[in-house]
Length: 108
Image 1: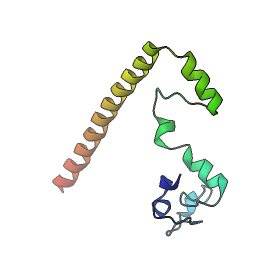
Image 2: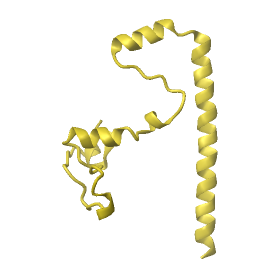
Image 3: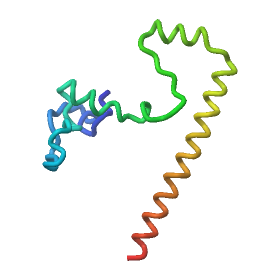
Image 4: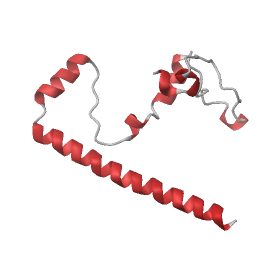
């Protein structure tokens, strides 16, 4: 999971952020702490693949094999189609938000 933080991408495993959190956030683990399991576990739950719908999760290689052996091809196509639809809607939503933000900035 070295891609979880910018420092991780550069091969560095920091135990804190370069800039400290606001006091109001002192109860939240540091998002750039790569050395404490609790900090990583806290932040990894916000990863895209845990936020997006239609993803099939597995707990082990055996669980994955079981799921692959028991799923129907039609179901795989249905999952794929639902993912494509969600991605298209998410893209449009993000574009609309950026258009609104940029329009507000342009007015100033």
